Image (cartoon, rainbow, N blue to C red; front, side):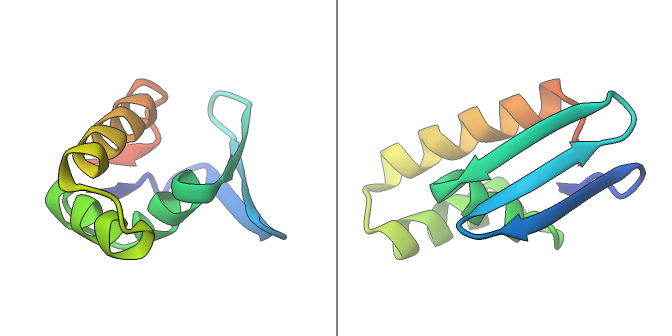
Length: 84
């Protein structure tokens, strides 16, 4: 999976990523782990990779990383921001 390519733009602004979904006219501001995951999704990856990288980056346990990633991806899917 990766970020939707069509009508989606984003920019790094300080410690945050600012996202504009031109299709739904939705504006998002992401920071912390959400920013980290968002930037990883710029390239094709899978849920297991995201969880593993989250564990490595933030030194959290696997269960928490898997839960955080699943929730983040569910939100992106609901907003139609990623392609499977």
